Length: 68
Image (tube, rainbow, N blue to C red):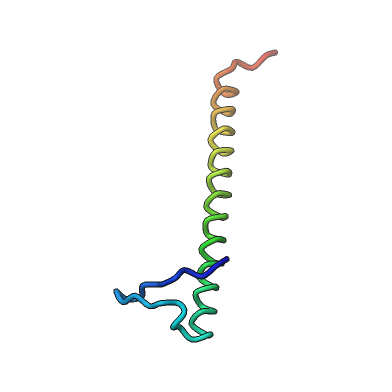
């Protein structure tokens, strides 16, 4: 994943080319974590959608009379 041309920290913009190797490593770490957070948010949305479907199925099943 390419580094951005610049980053803003505490209101100050820094060109990534001017950052130390250690600072650029942290930018990469942040990008990786941001990507993982986005992936987890997508997984959560999928799980919430499935849960809603299960609740709807439960409501439908609970509204049906028991067959004897």
